[in-house]
Every structure is written in C-alpha cells, then in structure tokens.
Length: 257
Image (cartoon, rainbow, N blue to C red; front, side, top):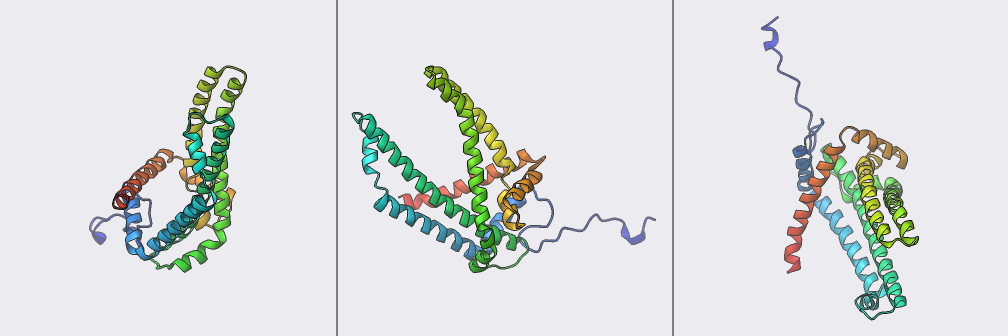
C-alpha cells in the first residue's frame, strides 16, 4: 500500500570499487575510466609505456644504423637513371627494413598491450598493481597474444590479396588499364570486409588476456560481445584513436622543435 517504506526509489547505484562502475558504460564513462586509470596508476602505466617505447626505438635505431644500411637503396629509388636491377634491389632492401621495423614495433605493442590490460583489469577492481605483478599475471598469455595478433594480420592481408588478385590476373593477361581499375575496386571492397572483421574481432585481445581464453575462443568471445554493437564499437575506437593521436601530437611538438 502507498506509504509503506516511503515508496520505490529505483534500483541502487552500481558498485564502483575502482575506476568505473560495474554496469554497462556510456562512451564518456569509458573515456573517463581510461583517464582515471592513467591518473591513478600513472607510475605503472608510464613505466610500462616508456620502457617499451625506449627499448623498441633503440632496437630500431641500432638495426637501421648498423645492420639495415638502406642509404644506397634510397639513393637508387631517387635516381631517375637507375637501372631496373638497381631499383629492384633497392625496393627489396627498403621492404626488408620496413618489415623488420614493423615486427619490432609489433612485438613492443603486444608486450605493452598484455601488461596494460592487466593494469586496467586491476584498476576496475580498485586493486594496486606493480609492473612486476602485471608481468607475472600476463606472461602465460603472451605467446597466445602473439599468435592472435599474427593471425589477425594474416587474415587482413589474405583478404586484401584476394581482393587484388582478379585485377592482377587481368593486368598479367595484357589489359593494364582494366587490371589497375579492377585492383583498386577489389582493394576497396576487400578493405570494407577487412574493417568489418577487425572490428568484429577487436575485443579478442582483452578476452584472451582477462578471461585466459585460447586464440579461437577469444575471437568467438569478441564476436559475441560486438554482435549488435558493431557501429558503437567502431565509433568508440575511432573517438579514442583521435583523442590519443591529438595527445600524442601535442607531446611530440616540443621534441620536434
């Protein structure tokens, strides 16, 4: 009856032991949780990010300066009178250097992802964590995380290759103009498919690290989480990427001068 207990006041607020409330989140709450994590655990976050960045850049600089001496290749590519053999050799050296740099950066990204995912999971529960504790917790899953990242890259390049293949075959048959047009159309279509799949699998890495899933199960878990929210996940990732790039550009400006 009315008057008993003062009426219904609605559900109680969600528990918030850490940086976010334990309920479905809005975009603002997700971004606020990321900022709160960096602010509360700045020593651990900065230590992990700075260490990975410094080690990665030092390795890249040493390899480019001592092993991958591509100055001759760069000169050949910029020389209009270079022969076909020189251009082929220069292009091969450039691609080798780019591949090595990409792999080193990928290793650093995977290591940082594994450690920072652990830090974030502790931050959600309001538990402190050191870099050593984050590494001990993440270490068993790191090989699987490498496998997942390489599998996703392989899927992406495979889709792009399939999209470009008809145009390449047409060009090889003698129709250069039609082949180039078909390659462009194929790559555009393949790019749309690849983007759709990458967003669909974008939560596989957190699922693998936090839920201790296998590679296949983490991809299946990501598919279930993204189902019905593909555009929302895309929008959040785009917004987060834009904010991160703006902050990175601001940080880089004084070092550029």
